[in-house]
Amino acid sequence: MNILILGSGGREHALAWAVAQNPKCDRLIVAPGNAGMAEIAECASFDIDDGEAVVTFSEEEAIDFVIIGPEAPLAAGVADRLREAGILCFGPSAAAARLEASKAFTKEVCDAAHAPTAGYARFTELAPAQAYIREQGAPIVVKADGLAAGKGVIVAMDEATALAAVEDMFGGAFGAAGAEVVIEEFMEGEEASFFVLSDGKFALPIGTAQDHKRAYDGDKGPNTGGMGAYSPAPVLTDAIAQAALDQIVQPCIDEMARRGTPYQGVLYAGLMIKDGQARLVEYNVRFGDPECQVLMIRLGAQALDLMLACAEGRLSETQVNWADDCAVTIVMASQGYPGSYEKGSEIRGLAGLPEDSWNMAFHAGTKRIGGATVANGGRVLNVTTRGTTLRTAITRAYDMVSRIHWPEGFYRKDIGWRALERNDVDAAE
Image 1 (cartoon, rainbow, N blue to C red):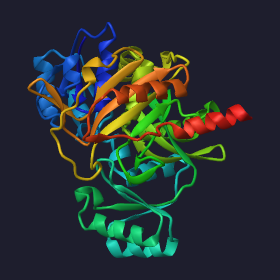
Image 2: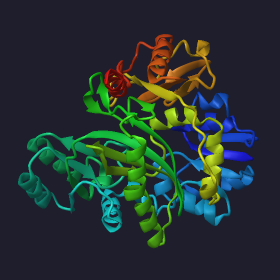
Image 3: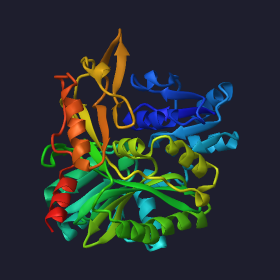
Image 4: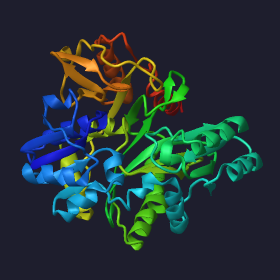
């Protein structure tokens, strides 16, 4: 098969790495790709948010299967255009992608499906939103309705922060994404990620993970796109995951089908877990980043088979073959991220790192200049490893990080602390 992957981040490098291992893959192209992906695939340059451009390229290059990585092309209807052209693709329609593109739409679906989630209210004007915040008090959560590159959610622990957040959103801080604001109940508990493939009818769980959103050790500092992740997530026990599938995910998939917009692709449910019960925080319509990296290093070559079964409507006859292992990814980011940062600093030591089914440095924001690999983004590298235990995987990952020379970068030194703490408590009991 000739396969095209759209995207340029660590998520897409992990997808490309897994796909390239499958013997079904004869030719692999990524657009636009990055320095790491260029070592395992061809890189192409065109506007991946333009459905016509994607279709034209796919037809010219005889592409058999397109995997859409980021949310923006999905919201722009690229999957719709590919299906109209008769090209097999992995990713939901623009109508179904509203589960991520609109927080208010997701709430409507959850209400109709009776899926447990946070209480909420929707606003299109500043004054009523601020009045609601004063009435409800803090802590409270303020969300820009639309896509805001992972930065449109403010968990306000005091009323002043919440009031400032809605003022920023209605003032244009998040562009069109903030034209409508959803204000939610603050949910207590522990958050984890549940990943399911859907072919429009059937839902197949493919793994759990937990990420670290804060920039610095001890879960301090500003929220980021994610500074690390591990899989599986111990807090998401088999029983809780099954209940989440039965009470949240499958009812929402059924509701999407009832509306005439069946959901096909990966559905990433962020869940808040307290006292053994899960409630939905939000849906994402693509793999998480950096959660995708830990899922892919655990799934390996079968990831392509699963995505094909999803695209072809064969999930009910498919199963996931999990190894009894754990995986961790550590994000190395440019100093200053998630605020302003400089590009162009050289990263040394990558050539000597292991690259196998147990250890990979996935590239996120990199490019090649003259033979050197340089930083070209906020989150730059995802050092990812597997182990028979999470502690083994973490030790292996930090050993790899220590071999990378990049003074202009930083990383958290406590990735996986929640799971290690939970495992230690379980062992003591």
